Length: 311
Image (cartoon, rainbow, N blue to C red; front, side, top):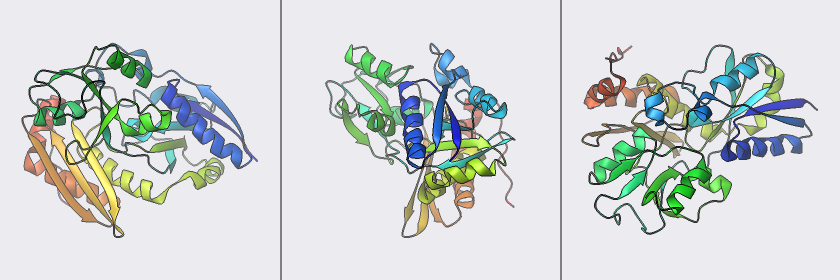
């Protein structure tokens, strides 16, 4: 069997994910080593992610280690991977998804609706902020950075009345005590790829790809590819007010897409069905742009983005 070196960020959740993959590989008889790599996103902890604006901020240094041959594979939260994987790399496997939804966490309140006027809600995500403000414009949205433990500790300390986090991370770490509400996707559409792990390797590394093939989940590959196609067509990274949620229904893909104004004043929603993940994602993205999404994204990006031409 092979000796495989995994590159990972050092946060508690990233290490859980890397160790989870390590366990599955060891069960197949492989020898596995783990190398912790600090990324740009780990170093910048006092600025809201949306203001940093660096694509690949959680992946660049890990990809450098891959390119140099220091590691053989990288385990990422798929939502952190840019939709266009840089030349020289490929996604060898996308694992079975955890719950892709966002969750409402609080010590005092049982749901978003129960929050008092002007309550402080922590999130570092423009996507979450925009959709939250759309249903509760009275809320005070406060930036929230740090790993899962840090965010929960700040909530416990009373710095926030509630925080919005991904269900997947809390489920994986077993830290669900403060989860009071799983937010439906029609209220808060998740980030593209949320809940899935992406296993990245050097492009053309067929030996490693073969070792990892058993980790690939066909359903997760189809739904996340669809969501990422929508995000890519809209020119977005993981820190823009775009949501995408795909699921398989009766053998076909169903996709819901959202573009929201950060202030919550406009939320554009489109949905549709199809059999080809990329075509469906791009079709719903086009509909979002035509329905007002282009204007919202122009303001967010600070520059015009062309409406894609139809083939």
